[in-house]
View (cartoon, helix red, strand yellow):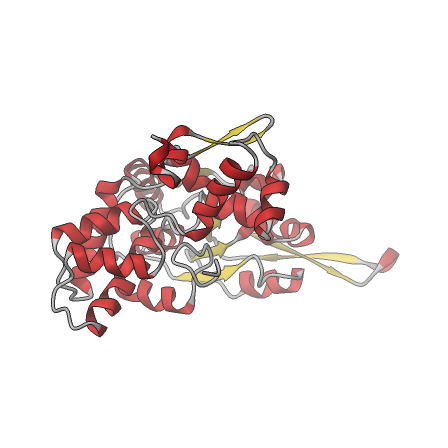
Length: 333
């Protein structure tokens, strides 16, 4: 299955966006998990409201699908502010930033997704906007160039990234609050699946919920994608209720095993184990063997394999663990 169309695809699809509209929490109390971040945000936003000031600029970082966009919506709601949304890929030129910033109103929240994709010239335009709520515009070229400053409404910038290391140090330092979203627990994922099933009116047995929770890679976006595909499977096959057996059959059809591994996950482990004697082996060699991009393996597949203890990184390369060997070759145990 191509990673772009698989349940673990890092990029949200149009289908995801439609699903988000139906399932997105409206209040912090409805947002499952990330308790420490929620508590810190309540204090930060509550203090800003009491002072009548815009909240400090907020940087959210962590793997795809963990709820960074949802948090941006909740931040705006908590502040009673309008949310304006854009992305790093949409802001190609300084003029693009200027158009967005001058269109804001006092107190608005501006959300920039994939902020690591901003180029250096665009970052430099954002600096004074973040610090002093001013926009510098250069008119003319060379010795005749002049800089004009335009006052901007007081706003809060919320930025999200999966690659915080790709942001320049001066840019990172302009955010007053940094929060890293981590993977969820299985209990939290089960809670999310329960909530989503009720909102989508999917009759779901506890065994099915457990099977989906284990296969969801500790990621809400994956959980909701799998729930929807299991629902479709049950509907097409005439099942009124999604049982554990229905859920397992639907996952098997998607080539997803009981630990949430897809074909590529298993192939990574098999290549290291069988062709490179368990490792260590370099990422480039694995990518060449599987005809996959290095970045895809490193950003999409490796984090989960490492989290469940099937893969380890060493200074000399990747190594399959005993648990990883046992999973792909149960007889090895």
